[in-house]
Length: 84
Image (cartoon, rainbow, N blue to C red):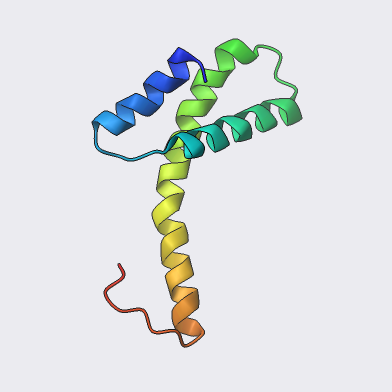
């Protein structure tokens, strides 16, 4: 991961928002995949912008996905108390 992308991750970590190295690598993979599909030619310039946006999207989706998962467990009759 480039220094520029690592700086984006470090800024979140400084705010005590945890992003693991593995999560950052997954987000980077997703960014590269999106650029491949979209046939982005100016990848070096575009990647930091896309990465920053995708980190934000990932952090937003985490609690949404967790809530959806807990609701699914409740619907299946698995008791979940004080989880959220």
